Image (cartoon, chains in turn cyan, orange):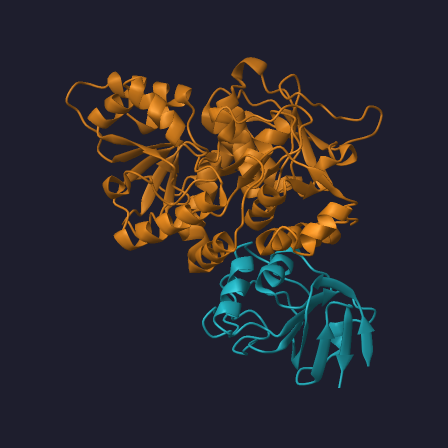
Length: 132
Length: 398
C-alpha cells in the first residue's frame, strides 16, 4: 500500500510502525534517555519509540517537547520517522531540528491503515509512505 | 507557502546549516498554519531561557545551534532567565542550576541575542509601533505588543521566534492579517477597577472564556488604566487562556468592533471580580515570599514599593522575603535612584533578569508565595508547587 502526503521534515527512513491513537506530549510523556512512553494516560505507555516509524494523530502539550525530540535524537533513541494525521508546531519543529523525516496529511488515514509491527518506508522528500 | 528565490537558497544551505534549519522551521510553521509567504519583522523576542523551563534538552539544542553558526540578523531580545545573572548567590539559587543557566546564556549571546532577560521589553523602550510586524514569544509581551501598542505578532514558540531572529522574517498568517484582528466578544466592565488585583482577576476571568476570540472591553475607566495595570490584565488573560490581542475602548490604539453585526456581551461586576480573587487565593496564612514583578516591574512600580517600605516604622524589617522582579536595565536605574537601597534596607531584594515563575522556587524551599499578579497567581501552584496569596502591594507590605 502506498500513501501520499505532505513533507514536514525531509529525509528517508524505514522501520517497524508503532501506531498510537492518542496525541503525545513529548515533555513529560517520553523519557529522553530511553525513548519509552512514560505518560500513563497514553495507550502507548511503556512502549519504546526508538527506531520506530511513529504514527500518531498529532503532538500536544508544552512547546519544550520540541527540544525533547532533539534530546532523543542525540541519545540515539529517536523515532526513525514520524507520521501525523495533521502536524502541529511542537513535533514538526522538533523533527526539523533533529533531522527526523516527517510527513502528514496522507491520502488515507495512517492511524487506521497502518498497524503496529508493519514494515514501513518513509520518503519524506517526496511525501511518500510505503507499507511492506 | 511560497518562498522567494533568496529564501529558497537559504533553505538549500547557501547561508550555512543553521540558517537552513531556521528557514525550514519557518517554512513548516507557515505550511501548518496556511501562510502565503514570509514577511519581514523588525524584532524577535525569544522565550525558552530559564534552565527550569527548557532543561538539558533545550540547553543541548542551543549549544549545538550556536556552534553551527546560528546568528541573529535583526534586533532580538531574551525572556527572563531562571535567576539573577549577577546576584544568583544572594537569591539562594543552587550552584548546579546556576552553571546550567549561564551555559544557556552564553549560547544565546553567541547567537547574537541581547541578554535583556525581560518579559516586559515595553518597559525598557522596546516598543514596536502601530502596524509594525514583530515575532515575539512571551505571552504577556505578545499581548501588550498587539493590544497596547497595536503592533502585530503571533504567539511564537521559543524556537520559531529564534528562527525569526536568524532569518528576520515570519510566516504571514494569524494576527499579522487585518481580518484576524477583530473583536470576538464584548466584555462590559461594571467593576470599579481601582486596584491592580482587579485587573489581574478580570484578566483571569476573561482568559478562561475567550477561547480563540479577541475580547473587546468597555467600561474600564481610562484614568485607572495605567500601562502597569493593563499589562497585568493582558498577562492574566494570556495565562488562563491564550488571548494574544484585546481591545479596550479609549485605551488601546485599535478598536476593531464591527458595527451592525451582533456580538456576544459578557458583564463583569465587582462581585464577580471579588469572587475570582477569592478563588485565586490558596494561602490564607503567612507566606515565605512576597514576589512582585510579574510581568517585570516598571521603574514606577519600584518607586511605589520603595515609598511604601519607607513609610514603615524605622527598624521594623519584613517578616518574609521580598523579591521585586525587574529587568537589568530597570534595576540599574533603581540602583541609581537609590530605590534598591530603600528596598534592601527593609529586608527586600531587587532581583533582575528573572521572576518567581521561572525561578526554581521549590528547590529553594519556598512553599507559599504572595503576589499581586493574576498571571503569577495562575502559574505558581502548577509550575512552582506554591500556595498563593493574591493581594495588592499595600496589603502585602503591611
